[in-house]
Amino acid sequence: MRARPITRRGIVAGFLIAGLVCLPFADLTLAGNDPWAALSRMGMGFLSPDFGAVERIMRAIALTLAFAIAGVAGGAVAGLMMAPFYRLRPVRWLAIALRSVHELFWALILMQITGIGVTTGILAIALPYAGIFAKVLSEILDESDRRPSDWLGARVDPLSRFLWARMPLARREMATYTLYRLECGLRSSAVLGFVGLPTLGFQLDSFFRQGNYAAAGAIMAVYIALIATIRLWMRPHAVWAWLIAAGIVLVRVDAPPMGQGALWRFLTSDIVPAPLLQGDPAGLGPWLWDLVAGSILPGLAATLVVAQLALILAGLVAFCGQALIVPRVTGRLVAIPGHLFLVVLRSFPEYMLAYLFLQVFGPSMLPAILALGLHNGAIIAHLLGRQAGGLALRADAPRGLTLWGWEIVPRLFGQFVALCLYRWEIIIRESAIVGILGVATLGFYLDDAISQLRLDRAVLILLATGMVTVAIDALSRFLRSGLGAGRLRARAASERGIALAAEAPG
Image 1: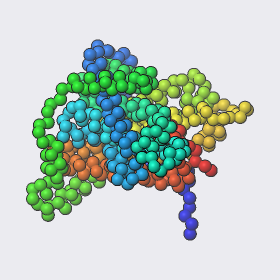
Image 2: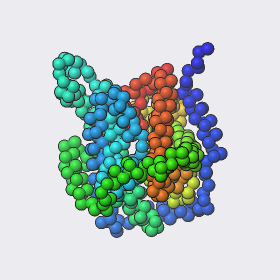
Image 3: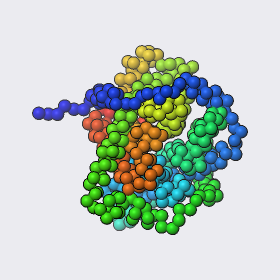
Image 4: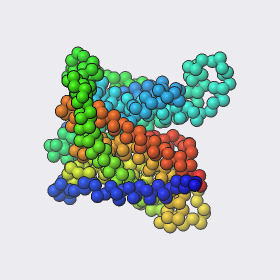
């Protein structure tokens, strides 16, 4: 009997049903908070930002930029070295392993080896970005014109072939992607402040703990301005100047030393399961079962619940929000503020948004679901809105909701489903990491294990997180291939955030 083909409507229906199944298991309580009072206090502070702590803010900006530039540069170089060999299984597996772990998780683990310092901040960004760069740059190289490389003949060595025949043709697109990845690096660098590094996130956390919402508003205003103007201050000819400036800033950062042998102790003692370290191999099974049953499975269940509900919310935001920035649907008076609204939502990292919502609604799954859903929904809505604005329409095409419902939605439904599937892996990763804020996802158990210096448990939880991310990515690719989406003309829209997914045929 022939299997029924996968359809877009079937995938959407399946995710909606999964969301309904997850809903009874979601903790959506307000934890006794008065959200309107909290929103009022925060809103008053944000509308009147206080730049009085200008020295602290400027230092945080400089360090946020420095960590982002150095981390992205390191990841780009490592990824470029792996990209020509990405088809080799060991290289591909290494790249997958690196990018399946969130930057904050890398930071938490690296702190046990290198302390809270420059090395931790740079590597926490560079390691996952190296895996991302390796994948995306390899696809850029694969889709570039191969005729100059073939013309060189078989006698030319691979390095010369790469440097003189393949890389020049892909250089412009590589530079464009690297600029986008720097924008992501700024988000990652800011978020690293929540675990102790002296970036914008650290200052934002400090001001919130003090109840100084006006100063927190100043931090957020500066952060949005930094992201919005990146294409003005980061120019290709100024890259070396920015790298030198980042190096000067980071050299002046003081960090407490970790002492001799921290790496050796981490590899030979800290991450060795406790029963083996104590000479009790028979106790390994019960120890492992306690970890799986008490931490990994509950954390995994909560991660999937948060991610599934966040994906549904992201889809709703994207489906309705795409019309906001199309003037022929809403008019220019609505399109301009709608575009600004989406820019703000997609500029803030999910973790930072979850932190803000946590101040309003209290500790539950609700802040995480709202943050993940709104951020990712804004990204998808922005991409779909750009496509909708570029559609070729009939001269007598209608306007308003009639145009949206009968022309735009049917033509872009394939991209909508594909982009939601792309963001699924990202949402899973972020659902795990928001556990550090107190939601009982995998990040909560990882942070708890690290705070108790039980690094053997932390490493296994980290491995479980990476395996879940890889599994979701594989399932997403399977569903997309079932739709017949084929190769994307512009690589990995969820990773690049600036490209458009090619429309699936049929």
